[in-house]
Length: 410
Image (cartoon, rainbow, N blue to C red):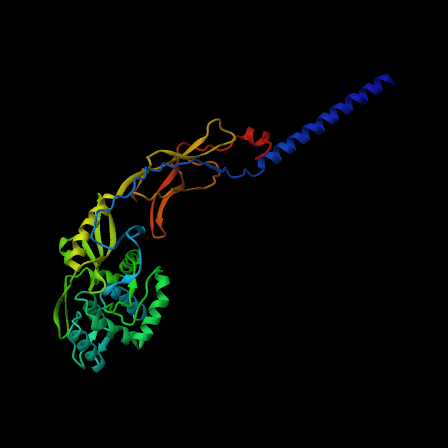
């Protein structure tokens, strides 16, 4: 009986061991074939903020000034930003409003045609009598929308500004109402369009900061950008007309609009296309408002252009092959770095810092060295981005079989 008991006990042990072995094998197989979760990235703080130096504005004979740049927006202001008469810089609003109602493509210069009415001739005679800037018109004359925009923006014809506004909106009152409703959409919070479209009357007011934003908006329209860079144009009746923007002779100045009146003094919105770093151009836009006359505005603009150029810096955000993140792989001893493929540098305004945005993806093994795993970007605005890709610094090997069997969590 005892021998029998020993045999039964020994058999039970063997059976139990076999069951345990089978269970271990089944669990090992289940573990082996269980999906491996993605390997999540670990980001590093790459805040390499450059030292910010206070702006040293030049001493200028102007009530207020502002600087911005295409892709950067408004960057800096000087002087009290209070609403004062804009003079003819208001015609940029008129140009945007006309093209909003009747858009043109670049190269579309002959249509639609506008027929000059006796009321348009009356506007010409009125402005002529008031010593305003004009372009001659005659009743029955036909002028294209593009040519009318040239007449309004180059020699700054007040009569053409009002005629265009009436043609597009039915009356100056309707134009003024529509323009004032559209100004907030343009980002102009301190601008009011008065009773004319030309800016001749002091009822149209703005600040240097708003006019700089207006200049940036205007350059986004390719037709306006093309016209304001022209030195002259030929239009019906008047013949050859010339741009009153004298700084176009510099070559790097590409616009935008002058203004001059007894109430406003000299007002000037300028744009200059500067190669601040080799093969990297920035279009700087600035405004001078409240100089004694337009000639003084040109003088101040030259100072502000030099000032703006000096305050753009070429900053290296990250160096080539710099690690900006990593991946901790459970079956490897060392972490795998994620590094930038090439140096990321950017043109920064001296008092503005743009924090880099890092985007890394999760990974499934295996992945070879050099795999693209994300980007590091620097956003100056929604339309202006500098970026470079991020790659794996070494191979991400597949998980070994033994690790897949004995793993506990992943």
